[in-house]
Length: 84
Image (cartoon, rainbow, N blue to C red; front, side, top):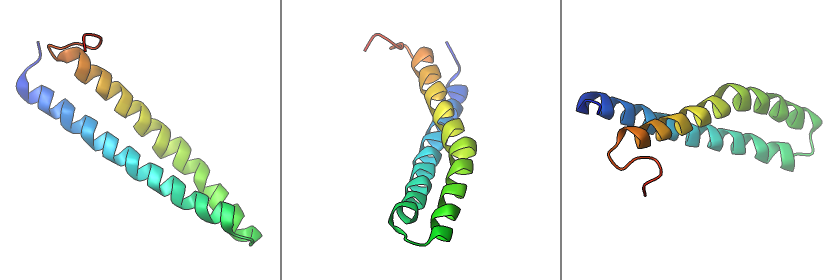
């Protein structure tokens, strides 16, 4: 098994990635609102231009980090990944 301090560090990293992912989702939704509601072409264009970097550099990496961290957490616990 894995040592307790390392397990706690992995759990902390997993929680931080999960909370960051939720924040990135909020930022993405906040960019969607003006993109869908505005009649100004410049505002719509700016919102869509900002949505791509948020998606590629924040949302996807944090989603993958959250998933991998959760799987690792499940594998290192005595309960396992598929037991419960």
